[in-house]
Length: 535
Image (cartoon, rainbow, N blue to C red; front, side):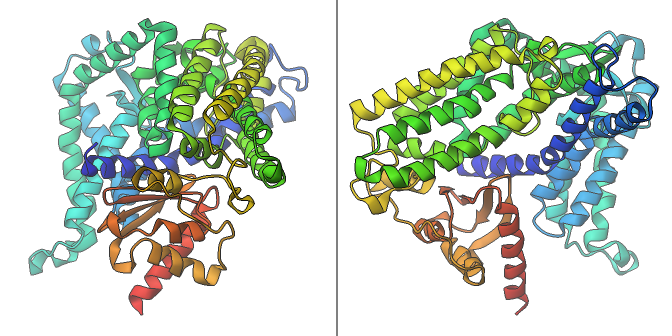
């Protein structure tokens, strides 16, 4: 992949994370609330009681976030792609998204045949205060966010003539964004019916592939994890007609995640056609990874078992409960790409296909861990989600994963954690190790204990090639994502000493994997860099 394309996709991917971060709480409120307030299922709350009404408020509060998700993505993408004055870009995207929808709805009303457009299922919708606008879904929000970010990065330092000087600089951004939004709204009115038809046709083609299509989805999703581009892959399925179109409660819903939560809120049975983009992950996160870890422990050298046990057990618990798998996943990526791509990714695709054939309907908002499994599978009930077949499939895959990993590790003599020659080397290998092994065959040594906070920021900056080499710093759920002047100046070994679980460099983009604390690291690093620049 071209470095510029990779850099752009990386920025797009990490900009998706902020809107996604708002969904777990919304999903929790909607999932639990709809279960307790559904008269056909609830035995705990009487309809009309105080608690029934209170839970109804929580359900509605959670549901609203899914309704404004396109707006959240417009703001999130602009915020993520803006190089400076991010708050201006975010506000401008908010304004531009409303203006775009106003222009779109007005174009439909004044120049187009509404009755003819309504024949295309899911094309026309009511959004916020706009009646009979086109349903551009999250894709429309993402496109508007990108356009605003491009305009922002180009014009936030613009100088206008003296008589217009008040509107120079960042004050110009909402103005030019609104003008662009009008143009985009008009263009969308013309081309969006064709775009929607194309997306729907592609989604229908994938659906016609049946189990094989689901298998491919699972394989590709897992294979993209090392690159950090998996967000870019799955989001269109979650939020556009690629993931399906359905009528729920008399309203046409587009996108797998939107349909899933509409069905969850209405008390309907969760459609396997929607949940096929989710349910298979539970098999891998809750059962496959712990089994792989157990196989690595059992095949560890006798003198290394004690150290390997602690590392592998903690990583397994993290995967089982939360679905965060990177430390464990990169360990066998380093040990053998064949083990990762040839066994792990293929088994992942099979897991997705199997639970789809069993009519599983367990979704999620963040990952496929135990907490999500309770909320979106167990609590709504097996008659709605078919969570029991998912659990039974997971148990079967536990043994399959264990056998496959144990046989591969022993037959190929793979250096998984605990099989290193020295007891001092017992650790969970990282993406940095994998990249280094491809160049000179020597793993990057690292210190598992991160340094004190006072020196951490300095070490990260030096590891990234110095302050003058850093153009932009951001983060997703587990990774520090950095745009650099030159990726060749990155010192992966030094970044490892800061406590990073992995480093991935592609062109002028770097991903440093710190885990769930990356948000705090990014905030402190940014503040430290700002203080250095002011000094």
